Image (tube, rainbow, N blue to C red; front, side, top):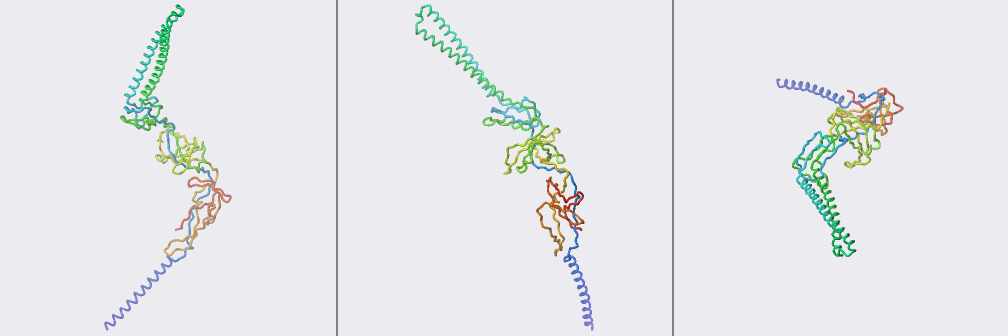
Length: 402
């Protein structure tokens, strides 16, 4: 009897647990149905929009370049030799005519002294030739008197010929000595020129930007003059050289306003304008560019030579036009659709329309309006359309409502 009672109790417990298992399975299936298979036609979207307004928009061309001194001079040497002294360093302020460096003068001083001695020798030779000329000239004059007194019998013809030849030779010696003096003068000037070039002076008043030499260094002025120093005349006035892409050069002309920034001062914008657009092109990494030159006021000396620049050149100013974010021109509405098995939303995008258009929010629904794009400036675009009015809401994005 006890065994029979155990069997009956076991079946009662099993029936109880089966009911709870069936209930758990039903709740799980209902949850899966509502979570994975329910339709999302009732799912709502929120459109992110902005109020349409008119304003002014400047059309710009962006370009990059470098800051350079408005006027700078590379100082070199016309003679070769060893640098003996250097009197200036980087960033030094120098005046016009100030001594910058000096080469060893031993060789050039010797050449100068030799040329000077050669000139003195040529002058002495001229004096000797003049003395000889005086002697032969006196002899010829005396022979002329003797010939007249003797009615041509004296002097003999051989004596006359000999003295006449000496007379002509002394005249030639004078001419030769004078030519030697002229040559010696030029040689002396050349030697003096080279000697003076051993001292290197500043041609302008300015700031030393580059110093390429140190004492003891040898410089060779053979085929190309070596650059020893670079001097900027006035750093309070700088020059911005930017490279304009060939696709944009037709929009650029002298007198246009521009602004630029440098990495050193990210919160500062510098204003300038184009002074010159150079006709000659340059090829940088297979891209054809043209150089535009702008003058920059640098009274505070914030800008340094060689700084890289990102510039925006104002090519046109659009007045009283509709200005929207460029995202409004790229926006494509998404229709609500069914939920995927794993819960991911499957929205259906409207077909892409290549014609420029924006979407206006009317009564909570998007409405397409075709527009004409007048120009772009970074993230902003200027548009026009007879179907647009101020105060309308332009859709720039679409989000799923939470």
